[in-house]
Image (cartoon, rainbow, N blue to C red; front, side):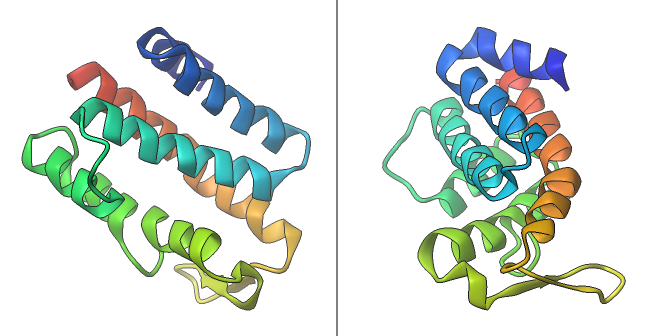
Length: 140
């Protein structure tokens, strides 16, 4: 993951530093903050690659997919409103996140009020997000 972050840092020091900060926060047990920084960096990188800061995240993802920078699986992973990055991000940013939960593929409910949930989310989503961002930057 470090090599991918270094490549992203070469694209933009700012975005690379954001991702490194997210990983550092995660390693320090600050997983809610780490997830916020990671999701913010994800949205900004998508806008940067698209060179358009006037659209919403959903429009950015659609554009990247239509232009061959996101696979169908990666698009679904990022854009799904229930369990994807976009769905979790919207609950974190636009609502009182602590009243919500995430249900994993095995039916286990992970309440957002539990600090351990954010660790699980970062562990399960972070590496794939960074890999997707690395791929987007390399292919753009």
